[in-house]
Image (cartoon, rainbow, N blue to C red; front, side):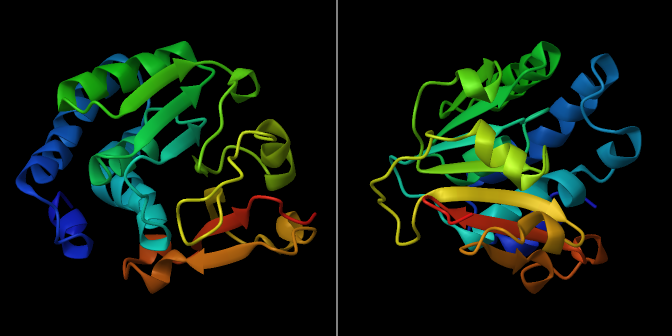
Length: 211
């Protein structure tokens, strides 16, 4: 399953974006031989399990030109790099505490020729900046995650949706999210028909969430 699955759901991509998404596979196949950033079984399904999954956030929220997005615990660059290709006028900061993963992110970004990504090897608590949205892919339970990113969401919003956290997570989240009264869940199966997305969601938690 290749680039076609991305084009199926994002037919409006321009030639540059299509070329960048195609190149993603080559770059990750190459880097995965040196540093294992994507599991062996997943690398063959990169577009379904990593690229399209990351782009599920874009089905919930389109990022405005000039906005700033922080990707926490980006690993090899997900969801940040696919989103950065899709929104070239938005600035993405990709943070991970593991240096070799950030090295891969830097090399992939350079190989793609994209200029709207900054990669930082750091713990998120040490980042001193504010962002319109914070994205992530299941790096911690929500109470832990909200503690990490406290104070890093801008108050003034340039989007219709209030600034906040957009979190990719799967399974039953009832217990984990029971204390967040303002949380919203978006089932990825309502955007994508593949069975891989059956239990996967985008969790949206607006800034000034009530816990």
